[in-house]
Amino acid sequence: MRLHTLVAAIGAAFVLSGCVTSRGLEPQGHLTDPATLHAEKSLAKGEGATSAWPAADWWTGLGDARLSALIDEALKDNPNLAVADARVRQAQAKAGTADANRAPTFNVGGGVAGAHLPEGLVGPELGKFSWTKYGYGNFNYDLDLWGGKRDAFEAAVGSQRAAEVDARAARIEISTNVARGYVQLGYAFDQMDVAKAELDRSRASRDLTKQRVAAGVDNQMQVKQAESEVASAEREMAVAQRAIDSARTQLAVLLGKGPDRGLEIERPTTLAPSAVAVPANVPADLLGHRADLVAARWRVEAASKDIDSAKKEFLPNVTLGILAAQVAGGSDNLFSSAARFWQVLPAFSLPIFDGGRRRANLAGKDAEYDLAVAQYNQTLVGALNEVADDLAGLDALNAQLQAQQRAHDAAQQAYDLSQQRYKAGVGSYLDSLVVRQQLLEAEQRLVSLRAEQVDTSVQLIQALGGGFRPEAGDQPVAAADTH
Image (tube, rainbow, N blue to C red):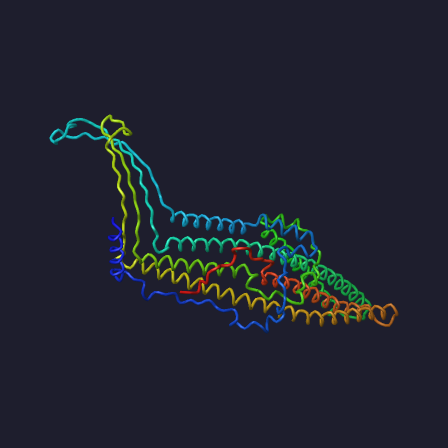
């Protein structure tokens, strides 16, 4: 085909292209600008902060070797990580397929055909059975004039990047969940200690009440009340044991092991709140430290490229084909036969009518883009509010802990005074046991608040990205919000 003929064909294509058009189809979603969410006051602690906290292996800074070993085990054996890694390989394969679609293809083949022709036809081989051998080579190349296949490849790469970041996010989630489970297990053991102390106190109170009844000082109503306290203490023991069993089971799940593995986990060392305390300033560049936000942004980028690829399907295209073949009949040697031919097949295509397939495909890509944008915006809003809520929760817990510490100190002093009065013969042992109950309740609440403080601190570590550090190529380089 001569050059001017090809140019004329392309020109005619633009004239006819109105038959199948993408006019009127555009996505509706728009990425939210983080500055419009106004989180400055809630995240005031982030002003001027560096990005060094939390570290990528933040749990090693807690100084608990058993916790570090549990997290390492979970990062090795948790099934969710295997799922995330498989999705990465799946996305890589799809990107490879999209890349391969941009390359030319070359195929070779051949065969042998036998036929028996009737004598009534004209020809030298009538009434005989004869063989025909053939071989061919076929080359095809889509010129991709408008870059539609390149856009499809870039979309697949964006999905691959999102899957890779998701895999890293899954590891962060596993590490923080193991730490939280470890904290809950330690808290359950602390509750067991308090419950045991309360059981000892209630039993001593019951025995003393029985002695007073025998001496005619109290009556059976006080005995029943004391027995009720013993039963309540025994119930709290059972609750604490159930909490220990549940925490061990949850840790076994995170480790990717059976329940017996959970039974092997010893009592944790109680983590001090200061070990996971928030620094004076938290990272201000939150968006760069949330793997889920980075992955969501890559999905927006991939959806944008899918739209570009779908739009290119409305445009004309040119493909180049080359076919070479050789045929031999009867007993002739295929490779010595003179029956050979070749042809060059430049082809021009223009969509005129397709029943609405291309418009439906583009409308679907627009919807996928809108979905990706909505999910990104949802993740962004959730991330900012999650950090703000954890910071506010820690502030509230600090105030509660200070107040509860004062209440505990007062209860401790009251108990010490009751013991002194009892030893001096001024107060009764029963009065001392009543004050002891108040002290145990104060200790129980203090233990609960400390565990909640550590748990909230770990949640904040996760909300701030869990030590995620974007690597080269992690961030989309193009602005996806252009449709």
